[in-house]
Amino acid sequence: MTGLAVDDAAWASAWRTRSPADKLLLCVGLVGCALALPAWPGSVLVGLTAVVLAVGPARVPARTLGRAIRWPLAFIAVGALTAVVQLGGDGIGWAPDAAARGGSLVGHALAGSAAVLLLATTTPLSDLLPALQRLRVPAAVVEVASVVYRLLFVLLESLRTIREAQTARLGYSTWRRSYRSSGALAAAVLTRSWDRAHRLQEGLAGRGMDTGLRVLPEVLPSSRVFRAATVLGLAALVSASQVIA
Image 1 (cartoon, one colour):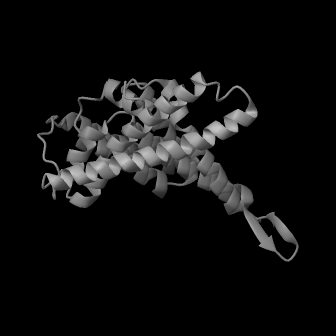
Image 2 (cartoon, helix red, strand yellow; image 1 turned 30 degrees about the horizontal axis):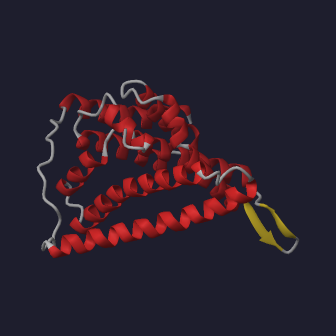
């Protein structure tokens, strides 16, 4: 267990041994359909397809998928609210097409988020980063993503250790103590994380590591059947969206 539910789901997924390039083709295609097709029925079909593939063939726990969508859903709700409210001479009010605009925004965003979560819950980042390198993504971008990914676990471990120590000292026994402990927890975690990152940078610089760390990635074979099914499935989504519309 890594401490990240999405990462744990990716390692345990039935699609773990599939080629990252194949899964990228599927998920990027779903995101493209979510953006290009109308919210009804295109986004609905894309979202349902992503969820069915995740909990079905990929065997991602539905509970993990539901927990992972909570934060994106909160941002989508805030974005939709700001999109349907307008300022006028009479003050704050709803836009004339508030329902259509809000529904379209929520539909596209939810479908795209479901497609991205399908990739995140089936592909560990250690598999995705080499695939991005092969796709000619700038090395600096891949290196920053790799460092941030590693530091996430340092942050989680620091958070767990400090919170356990505070709980043992009854730091969360009352609302007032909880407020003070939460502030001290945030300050301590950020300070410790900054210190660990600084020491990591100095250590790598001292060893002459001015380029990325080269490793031998695991080679996962691509499946022509999976790619063909992906292309046919995306074409079916586009056709079904046009027929229903």
